Structure formats: structure tokens, C-alpha cells
Length: 340
Image (tube, rainbow, N blue to C red; front, side, top):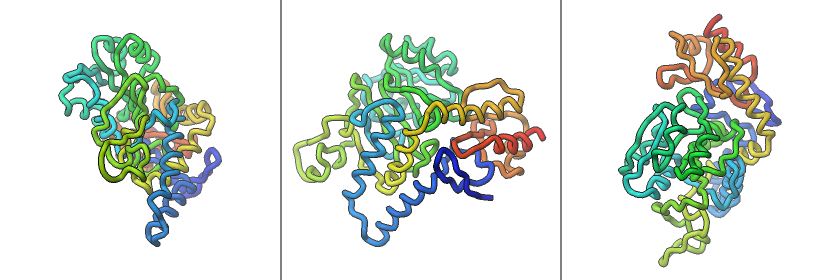
């Protein structure tokens, strides 16, 4: 059953016991309305291409705020893997890249596809091995089980000369951390950022210069004046890496991201991770400080589904995830299903 929930000053038409934000986030009413308005303009012929430039710029700046960088360091694209591909294309040929075992493939495959040499190690050993490699690529929060990377140790590894590429897709929107020090940070919109699927961003450190392999009209210094003819006229900042934006997706992201960026991030982190740790405590698991919980007890996924709890199955475990619209009542319902 779906009902209205108010969370952090926004309204959500979210299903009861929806614990699957790590798969797809539920937009606030304001976000959904903005997308509907944009689609209505398209349907009625009232929309104009240039109308979306403000939304693209707003979402770009807000995503930069969430990860700690100015808008000029942020490129926008359609998917995480395509943006990671730009970073992978900027490394020297056959670079040695260290990744976590079981890492999400949108982060690892672009490096492998470009001929780099990847080595997998347990997440807990990533930082200690980093100095042996040219680059480390890791999710800030692991998709499969919510494990959190040791960012302080990775920052030290970068200071010692190893490139660090972070995927913030399962972190930005609930996890409070300054990621501006990393060489590259990528992230998608449709999970914790509560926006439509079809938008992703890449924050590039000034020390890194990925090639503009997909340079197109929107990568121009002035997109609307540079759509015909040569020479190449790329933007002077990270916008040179832009691909043509999915307009209606940005219409939603331009509403969701500034709101998220303006919240008390420590309070958001405490809320989401606190619910995750409350579930873990009820299951006899130690706290992990993560909004994502993997439950490996037998029949967990079936029991949750039978109780109407929306979750996912990843890496052989039932994966539950908590966001702003979730409450302790959701934890209790999940516990009733799993141990009641």
C-alpha cells in the first residue's frame, strides 16, 4: 500500500516498507511534478531545447556541492560506466588498477575493456595494497552489502602517488563526506539522489585530464553557437567532457539535488545509517554505519517478499536500504518478517 510520507520537508508517495533505494529511489512529489511538467511541455509542443540549460547547470552545481567540488570541475553524462570510460581512457596504456572484490561492474569493466590490468583484493585490504598500483577504483559504499571504503587511507595513498577513482552512486545523497581530493568521482542520479534514471556526473581533479573522447555539441564552450563546422571549440573546464543531456531527467535532478545538498548532511547520514544499524542490531549483527544492509540468513528474501517488504537480492543476500522517507517502523516490519 502506498501512502504519503513527509520527510525532511518533502512529501513522498512511497510504498509501505519500501527498503530498496539502493536499486531505485522514490522521488519527492516536487521532483515528480517537475518531470511531469517537462513532459507535458514536450507533449504539447511548448518545450524548447534551451529551456533545459538552467536545469542542467543547477543539477551540475548541486552534485558538485554534494561531493565537494565547484561546478567547473563537473561533467555530465548519461551513465556511470560511460564517464568511467573517459577516466580509464586517460590513464597510460596497460596501467595497473586495484579494485575491490565483487565491485560493481560499471566501475571495473571500463578499465578492463581498455586493456588495463586489474587486480581484485578484499575491500579491507585495498588501502594497504594501493601503493603497488597506478590507480585504485572503488565505490565509496559497496552496492552488494553497503560496506564503506576507508576514505582516509585512500586519501593517504593518493598523496603518495596512486590515482584514486571513486564511485559515489551508492553514497551521494546520504553519506556525508568531502570527496574533492579524489582524482575522479562518478555517480548516478536514480538511487539516493531521487532523480530519474539517465543522468550521471563526473568530478575531475585539476591534476587529471581525461580525453574528451565523446566530444559533441554540448561539450562546446557555447553549445548553441558551436553546433556546426570546425575547428574544435570545447569548453575550457570539465564541461568539455559533457554529452548531450537527457532533458527530462535533468528537470527532475534540478529539483532533487539542490534540496539534498541543502540538508543537514550529518543529520541525513545519522538518519539513514541509524536505521541500517537498527536493523543490524535486531538481527544480532554489529553496527556498520551504512544505510545498506545485506542479510544472508536462509530464506530472507522469500520472507521479506511474503511480508510485502520491497528489497533486492544481490550477491546471494537480501539487500535492504534506508533513505530519508524510511522510519523505525520500516525496520520493525522488516525484523518481524525476518525473525518474528
